[in-house]
Amino acid sequence: MDSQHLMWVMAAIVVAAVLVIVGWQLLRRRRSGELRSQFGPEYDRTVRQTGDVNRAEAMLAARARRVERLAIRSLTPADQQRFSDAWREVQEQFVDDPKRAIRDADHLVDEVMNARGYPVVDFEQRVDDVSVDHPGVVMNYRAAREIAQVQEQGRATTEDLRQAMIHYRALFQDLLEVSTRMPNAAAANPRELVRGQS
Image (tube, rainbow, N blue to C red):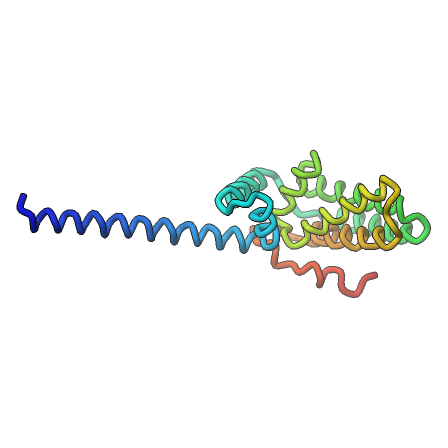
């Protein structure tokens, strides 16, 4: 093999290697973009929490695969009405007994999740599962639960409890009003869902 032919072979190998690297980077960017689009703020939170983009993306992809295997379903109109009526009672109860209303709101959210097909196991698993289809309001769930735990220790103010109710309501309404399961359910704006209600 002459040196000129060897140079052409080496150049072809280098070009092929560059193309493979560029292709891999494009695929990775595309995957990152899809995960960021699907998970919204939850993507950034998971990256911050893990400190590693690759690890965070692997965790989010695993969540999505897990939820894809679940039998998540829409609520029937009768269930939507029943849960809506129950939520109104919880909100009305807040005036007289805010602590009990927070406990009942948490239980009602669990009931709606169960009715939709989300396994109601430990809290972290519930949050992970809900984050796949409801990334715009999963932060509300965490915030409400944190306040509920502070309340259990007797350290929550009435204003804290009011904030917890607002957080629970955003999640509740998002879970209640999603009529079809869409991979990018982040399109629902939680601010729009709670607008006009107090």
